[in-house]
Structure formats: structure tokens, C-alpha cells
Image (cartoon, rainbow, N blue to C red; front, side, top):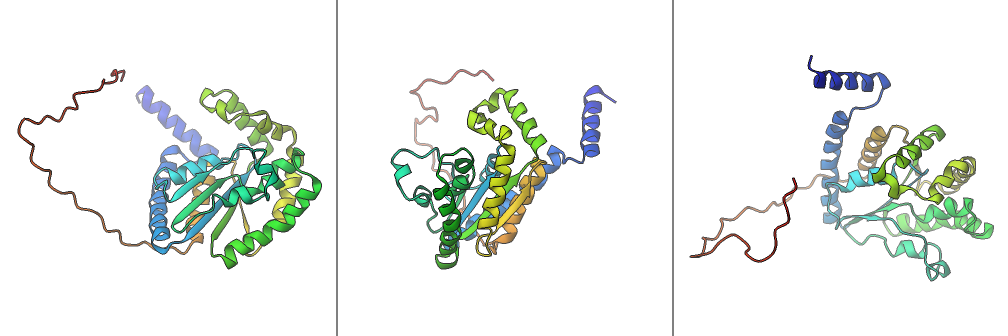
Length: 277
């Protein structure tokens, strides 16, 4: 057996032995789900539906990764990824959920919140960025607001919490430190979650218990295995919304107009970039 093939074979055997899904298998299953996500997209547009998907979870749990797989093959005009920065001084004086409401979907839109109003029950509470009174008020208010959104206003709301073990979180932070393309994901606030693991655990327990309701339940996603977590979450999302595959009127490609006399297809002006590859 050639060395290259032998290495691939050994890698496949190691993957199978560890119980992890191979990249090839993952990509194959993901591709099918991404087709279904485009069917959901067409249905949402046709029905004028409004969908909010909240992604919460521990740091390094893979929120951004699953969102990127959802949006990779879909329209950014329908699937809108919202990841808000820390509130400005002006926003701090507003009703807490106000800055999130500004990003809520109009008809035919799906909004994916990469962290959400639940920051108040997580990082803000643990790190002392809000008062105890503000924290308790949020826990009491959130279920009422979500009931108004879903039951009375007709928004489809899905809330996912991605959970990883303590050892896996530490491993992923170490991997980010060792990988230059992941350095942008690191901040003192994020890594502080390693030290405050049990504070965050207590906060998340309280948050989920207080805001898990029949109208807006929390769905917990075990995420130590990133590939399975991504597939399972997307599959659950698709199964939880009663969409139907609708017929799409695809355009026909017309005949090209005849070339005008003396015309060239070269642009002429402008400077070509160097061909490095």
C-alpha cells in the first residue's frame, strides 16, 4: 500500500475507533441538510413566516460553527446572522431587550442570534455587569416577553443551548491559542469562563429552569462532538418547523445577443491582479 493511502487508511481506522464521525461522512450528511434548509427558506418567504433562532451555550461550544453551516448555502436576505457587540452607553439606558428587538425578523426572514438577550442571565450576571435586581427582573420578564412574541405575535422561536464538558472546553481554548486563524476568537472575557466554570454552571442551571416554558422551551445540544452536534441541531430545527417543499419557478437561460461588429469581450481599462496561484 502506498504511503499516502496507508496514512488515510490509518486515519480512518483511528476515527472509527474513537467513535467520531469522519469529515467525509459529516460533509455528506450536512449537504443533505443544507438542501432542506433552502426548502425551509423558500417556505418562509412564501408564507411570510418570521423565525428567531437563539444560540446560547458555553464558550467554545460551537455556536458560530453551526450558524456558519446553516448560512453557508442559504440566502443572507432570509437567514440573517446577528451577533451584537457589548452595549453602548446609550443602549445601557434602554429597556434591556430593546436593542435585540430592533433585529427581529420581518415577514419572510429567519434571524439567528449568536448569543442573545440571555447574556443578562449568563455573562452579565456572572461577571457582575448587572445588578441582582436587574438579573431577577430579567428572569421574571423573559418568559412573558417570549410568550407575547410566539403565542400572540406568531413568531416561531427556537432556543438552543450548546453544552460542552469542562475538559473539552479547556482543550478547545488551548487549540485556539495554538492556531493563528482562531486568535480572533480569544478574549480575556471568554477565557475567564474556564476559571469560573462552576459559576457559569450555576447561572445556566438557573437560567434554563426559569425560562424553559411550553411556549419557548430550551433544547439542549451535547456538543463535545462538534460534527454530531451540528447535524443534530440542524435536523432538530428542520423537524420542529412544519414547512413544506414548495415548487420553485426557475428561470430559463436565454440566448445570448449577437456580438456587435468590432466588439471585444476584454474590459480594456483596469489593472489585472498578479497571478500568484
